Amino acid sequence: MFKRASILVAVVMAFQLHATPELKTVGEGAYRYLFWQLYDARLATVDGVFTDYRQNAPVLLELTYKRDISRQQFIDATVDEWQKLGHSTAEQQQLWALKLQTLWQDVKEGDKLAALLLDDGRVQFYFNGVETGVLDDTAFGAAFFDIWLHPDTSAPKLRRQLIAAQ
Image 1 (tube, helix red, strand yellow):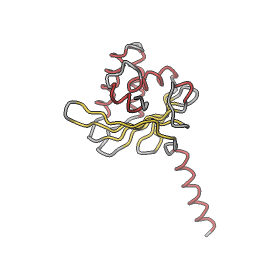
Image 2: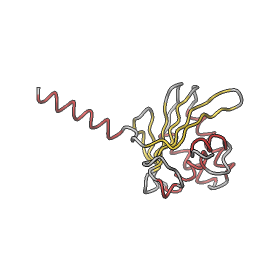
Image 3: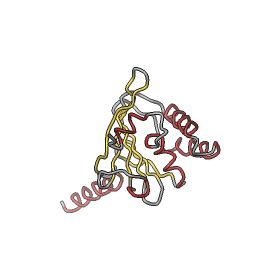
Image 4: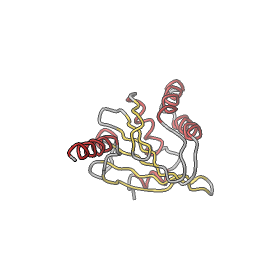
């Protein structure tokens, strides 16, 4: 009996170490492309307020998919957004895209992909609440989160919803 309880506690503790952290929602919104809703997005911080990455880390961005999207489609769209913003070099984008190949996977309707920007600038990724890995390049975090949060984002309505702007 004691052994079974110990195993159960160990399994629960292991899951908790890898589960997406519970943070307070700053804002939520939906991203649409033409006629299709691609995903719902949620931004969260410790206190439910977002000013900037340094003041509010850890910062969580969680995407809940409304359609099936391949890993390659998501990576290609991410690189396109980096190119539009122009805040990173082509070399950085290529290196990050290669790393994302190992951290991301195809998503199906209802799947959740989350990115957690840590205090030290690293980004932890989660798929359906389970950690898939960490990208250690501290320049990556701002470049990735800027896709949704920078004033020059290609999705300004979603940005306003996420940062709870009026």
